[in-house]
Length: 50
Image (cartoon, rainbow, N blue to C red; front, side, top):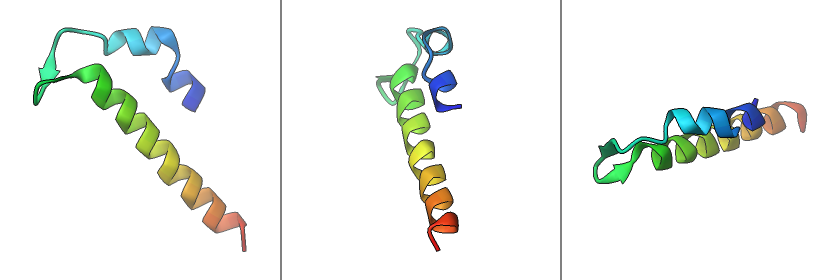
């Protein structure tokens, strides 16, 4: 799923000149996907590491 979210066609959807707090939307999308992948990894590892 992570590879799909960081695939070039999906990234091109968010590659626009629109900004949020002065930063392009693409930066927020990449940061959001990165932080969600860390949280999901933590949950999975915590559940199955026991």
